[in-house]
Length: 518
Image (cartoon, rainbow, N blue to C red; front, side, top):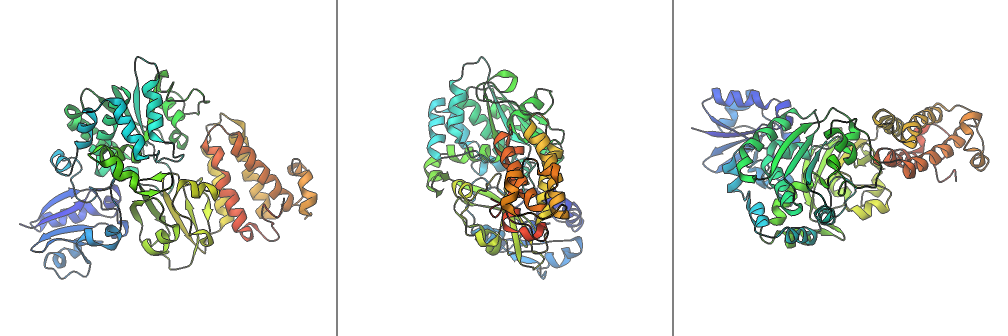
């Protein structure tokens, strides 16, 4: 009997994987539901076991099954592991992707699962923290804070109870790596959290998942039940969010976990000192936690630290999305140029039109023009270019995109999603939308930029033209950047100012860029 593997990842399901699986069953095949390889343009991707090993086909439909089974399908792609998109990756976090059944403890153990936890528990907590510090692992959520330092702070903090919290509120546009790991390799996340718990002395952990991920919530809940004896005495629970983007910010997330309104807390105190229920708490995201089993395996820290460049060590699962021909997850060491990711690996735009921009780091990431695509994927390099890596989402736009409209969307997004606690974010974003509308509508009389600068604080009252409004918008973005309590208001300047700098023509005629206005 022929055995067939088909992913039960959410994207594969949305593309019709269940119907394809049912058709293979009707054809008399044995069907195994596995994790996704991460080549989204080929979903539903199926693998058929034959005389020459496993052969991939995709995107498959029920009508393709006869040709797939008799070996005549034009959708054959050969051995999936040899496909250029997979073969050129350096997969550590996604090493099991496409190869294992998500809820099979046997598959997980057979592919190195639990080795990291076993080794960690054989070491003193301080030794585990030292090993993670040596690996160079930094938080994979946005700021890139050194993981070992955060853990050391929690371990040293006084407290009768400590917590480990996984931030799985993956709300950034163009990001899906967390979801894929939770759905496809949930035991890796569980193992990573158990390693943290041993290192900092925590007995309880929580995985905070956005409510828009029902399949991930179901997989995690089932996996925790299966793995509970393996991770004891550490206890782990799943909590679903309520759709607020702001709860991706760690202190808002902690408030939500406590049953409070999801709004930002002022810092200090840091969550590492007074986090969940006022106790010392480690808050890491999914990509950070799932890197730990590999790092803690024998020799893993040194191997991990050898990858990457400068202070960005290890690998980064990069998500290619938007108007791109080959979208999916591409895991590789830090340092790869953005141009290689978009043009070579991603294949350019799906529309076939020229690339106009790429937004890296979610809805609050900077828009980067092709002239800057040689930028290496590195925390410090992006920061120096007034951009950020964030969660590693790369969203591509072709030359039909209206960058003025996208800048307005970013400011409006901030206004809609603001928790309302701080004035720069709450009021600044609303005034920003109004300013962008006025700039793009071309209201007011034209004035010289030099004349506009002294008037920028009252330009909104006087209606002094678009150059003055651009100067006022620049000033407003700086206020939001340095005055907001969290990254929602603090990062909104990235998309707005980058769009204005590189595509001033999309904001209407005679609009000067921010540099020309001051």
